[in-house]
Structures are given as C-alpha cells and as structure tokens.
Amino acid sequence: MRLCFIHQNLPGQFGRLIKALCDDPANDVWGIVDTRAAERARRVHPQLNLLPYSVPAPAATTGAGGVHPYLTDVDQQVRRGQVVARVLLRLQAMGRAPDLVVAHPGWGEALFVKDIFPAARLLTYFEFFYSARGADVGFDPEFPGSRDRELRLRVRNSVFLSALNDCDAGLAPTLWQKSRFPDAYQSKISLVHEGVDTDAIAPDPAATFEIDGHRFRPGDPVVTYVARNLEPYRGFHVFMRLLPKLLDANPAAHVVVVGADDVSYGARRSDGRSWREALLEEIGPDLEAGRVHFAGRLPFAQYLQVLQVSAAHVYMTYPFVLSWSMVEAMAAGCVVIGSRTTPVQEVLEDGRNGRLVDFFDAHAWVAAIGDALARPNDMAALREAARRTAVERFDLRTICLPKALSLVRSMVIG
Image (cartoon, rainbow, N blue to C red; front, side, top):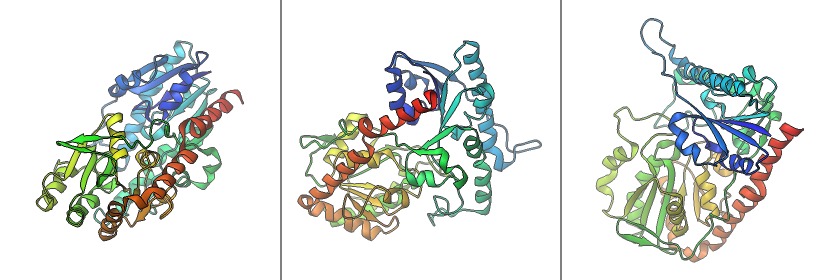
C-alpha cells in the first residue's frame, strides 16, 4: 500500500498506526508535517518519508482589505491547504501517488487533497465539531460566550463540512465526539480510538516518583492532576481553587500537577501570563508551602510513575475532546475522580470504575478526593475496574490498532 499521512503536528493521533504500517516493508508511507514538528516526526519510524512544509504568514485582520474577523481561522486554513497542495504536487511529480491519504482536517491541510489526487481514497480524523450550544461554548460562567463567538463558530465549521463531504470515510475516537457531527454524515464516521498501550501503562506497586526533595510511593496520600497544558478547558482554575480546602482537610496530602504553561484550547489570558501564574497569585497565600508540586511536562517514564503513585487522580474537562491521559490513568489503576461532563461519563461510571463530581462543585471535589485518601484499601475495586475498562475498551494491540488497520486495508483493498 502507498499511504500519505497529513498532520501539522505529525504523528498526532496517527503515531501507532503509522508505526504499524511502516513495519510492513511492502508499504510506502509518507508524512506531510509542519516544519516545526518535523524533528519529532522523524523519530516515529525510520521508514517514514517526510515532506515538511512552512506555515504561511496570517493575513492582516485590520485596515482596508483586511480579513473579516469571522474568517481569520478559515483564511489560515486555506493558506495551509494551499501550501500542502503544493507539497502533494511534489509527491505527484515523484510518481508517488498514494492509494490512501489519512488526514486531520482541523488546520485546513486536507482541503485540496481530492483536487490533486482525485483517485486516492481519503480517510479523515474527525475530532470535534463546534457548536454554540451543548458543548464547550457557554459551559463555564466564568468565561461566557458572546453572539460574535457563536456566529464565528458556524464559519469555523466550514472546513469540517468540506472534509465530511470530500472524505471517503472518517473516524472519531469517542461516541460523544462522533455525535457532535451532523446527522447526515454519521454513517461515514467509524468509532476508532487511538488506543492505550495497557502493557506499558499498568500498576506498579514498586513505583516511586521524586520531586522537590520528596519521594512518593503507592500508598502515599498523593493527589495527581494531568493536562497537556494547565488551562480552564481542563478545569485547572477549579482545581487550583479547591486546593486550600483540600490540603487543610488532609494534612498529610501532597499534590502533583503535570502540565505545561501553554494553551491548547480556549483563549490565552489578555495579560500575557499563564493560568498557573495567575492562579498562584490568586490563591498562593492560602497554599501551604511545599505541598503542591508543579512538574511541568514529563518524559513518559516519569509521567507513568506519577500515575502509579497516585492515591486520587483528578480529571476535569469541559464538554470537549476526551484526553488520552484519563484513559491512561485508568490503565495505570488510578482512582480516577472525573468531572460529570459528557465525554467523561462515556467512560467513567460513578462508583463502578471511578467517581464523578460536578465540574463546579468544589465541596464535592474535596469530599470525593478526601474519601479516596482516607480509605485507600477500600479503593481496590475501583482501581481494578478502571484498569479493566481501559483494557477491554481501549487496549492498543488487541482492539484499537486492529480496528484502525482493518479500516485502512478495507479502504485500499476493498
């Protein structure tokens, strides 16, 4: 098979699939990637052929002839799509026309695939369809939506509507994310999660994690929180504000926070500070020194140790994309205490394989976390059920990767 993967942050969601396809010497696998992510993409597999592209500069949004504010995202998506189209023309000139193109449409990179390679099959990853109601927008009263934002979302979805129309098939990682897309296209979208390596991510009673002069082990009263970036979409503001009461109620507890200071979703602060800096200024005087540890981003081995020593793992999210980290925490046998929001409720069942708490109810969060810390021996059933859920629904090798490979082969071979 001749395959081409397109993702500005390659491998993105396609890492395991690319590796599996590259392992077969009969496959010719190419990747198109933003130059800023090319070095990481080169480490995916030695048989992956890369074609990096440079991101075009955005258009001006002010002054005569400026892009309408609703069109800033679309304008940049078209610019990226045009650059990627030129890369595809290079691939064509090399005589490497793909049988299948796999792409994430979110940045516009897949806009012109069918124009360059009309005979190629197109498989598109559908992560999220924006809406002014029923999901992230307007969910948090601290960050209310606006009429302008609602109208802009309709325009922002145009690239996804184009992708839905152009693709031969699509895939989405969870039922809720799939359900966000228009009913008319539901039959095109298969449910295929990226998968979790439950062999590598598993409980370890001998694990240790060291930070700030402390060494934590399983059984210690350690509360953990993980997000790619520490931001409101993942409930970081709610979590930080409940910490003074949590620490006061649990004098032996420590908190380990994993995540960077950038923004993945939602808006940046207007003052230029990170959410961590702003929230530490807001509540820092109420935090007992030396009990909250910010680890930043961690290498995988240390990240896994954090999960393995956790006594209570907090996962919060707006009604939005479900993080890999929640399923990974379940695979590691964590007591996962999650927000009672739709994407979490698809996986976590209160009292069976974790706990569910209202996103904004600080008192309930403190109580649920405190209960996990106070009764560690009674949490064994929740831990076992959490891991079982991860293995039975999200295991990489036995479930998710075979599904993805089957979809790819069916599209190429028929």
